[in-house]
Length: 81
Image 1 (cartoon, rainbow, N blue to C red):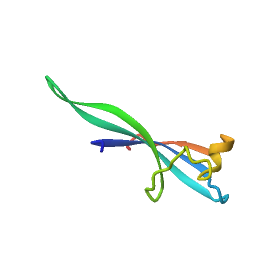
Image 2 (spheres, helix red, strand yellow):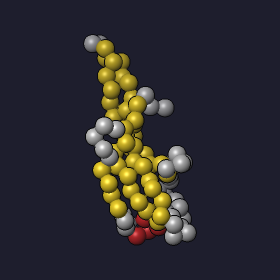
Image 3 (cartoon, rainbow, N blue to C red):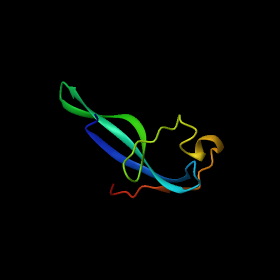
Image 4 (cartoon, rainbow, N blue to C red):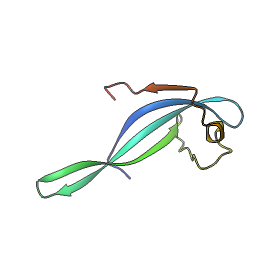
């Protein structure tokens, strides 16, 4: 598990049932021990629904965005996050 994470953006996408879902895009960071102290390095980027379920973009049945590539709305994260 990563030490820290940062919200990069919000994506609105349609799921397989045609319902709009808010997808949160996170960048995780790991602590790395260095000779001068601890450094924070970017790790994985991952996607969650607003109820904190991981989104598997490899499952084409989960979100219509998989097949069409359509992103309905993209909002940058606020600077304080």
